[in-house]
Image (cartoon, rainbow, N blue to C red; front, side):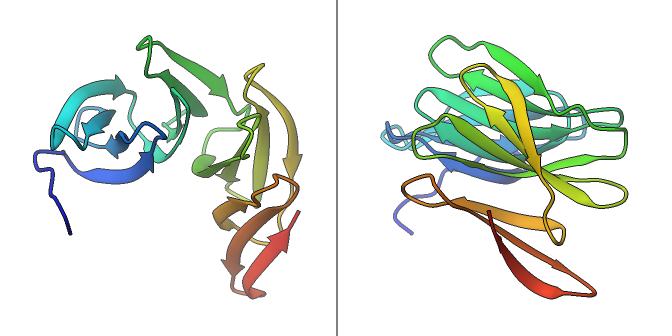
Length: 171
């Protein structure tokens, strides 16, 4: 440990940006948020309020993607760190679905979001430039982690269930 930043309320997810900043998904009884951490200042520099339910974060350039789940929705919030603007990408899922882990392709054009449904799960594929859903992948078990190969050609899904045990789906 080379440094500690204190005062971050209930950190749950973290993403590192190319410029050295870290983005931390935080929670509270009232509202989740993204805390911006500047390692040079050894402190948080900004807190960006979001609706409850931040599950995971991934950063790509000036954009930070946060998977979120509420009582009646599951979506991805897109925070533009340069402008402070927040947009959302609706995952078009039924109530009870949970948006989970995220991964982004090396070129930043595709975002992969694990969605756990009351029965089954999917990985939703998002075109980040158009900010819309372009496909889904049906994994063999509930997805707990997603990784994208360095060339962006292969996506790995880590999952497990009572029948199959631990599995890695290669998409």
